[in-house]
Length: 299
Image (cartoon, rainbow, N blue to C red; front, side, top):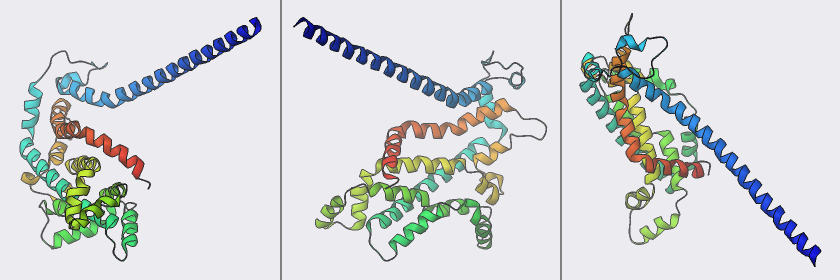
């Protein structure tokens, strides 16, 4: 009996030791993950911190060696001066109008195309989908010269039309994402709505779109970011300074011999503000959309 009791006690001690070792191992793994995430967060936030620091310094303090991590005196006037150096607010409004219009056009057209490829049955559907996927492999520069010649010949040069109009003809990437997402939604929802007499458009707008808000918000963020940050297309098509986007106006800060980096960074902080606000208010849907795309992207 005593031998059996000792054996049980040893077994209990061994099990307790194993649990303690597992906890220690998990604690070390969690600590290692935390350190990696902290390093990654610092690496990503440091450029923003440095932008704010430079924006609040005088231009002479920007080039001090060794660099000062915090400004000795906060020059809040840099934000006022920085927006006066260029036609900031007019170009800001131009960029905002173009970005919102392009985002609306890309989302509407991509949702319609994605729904057609995912739900409607028509001859050549698989071929069209394959062409869409194949077009993702082509760089955007391939059609630049033909499109420039086309827009020039129809009188669209020096206007916003070459930037805005193509957005209403779909985006292959967004259409692909929407196709892959709604394929994860059961067709029974469509069939139930059609039994009640719903049309395809009603099914799309009232059934699938509300269920697809995570991926749609992800598309909105990416579409707005792409339209807001575009530089090459405005540089190629727009000549009149009153029609410039903010990205073109910001490029004029870079001088031949000197650049006022403190004013540039102050204006640049205002430049990135719409993107920060959009991500802040849409981050819930954005994270849900990324998670859903991870599970549906390869299906």
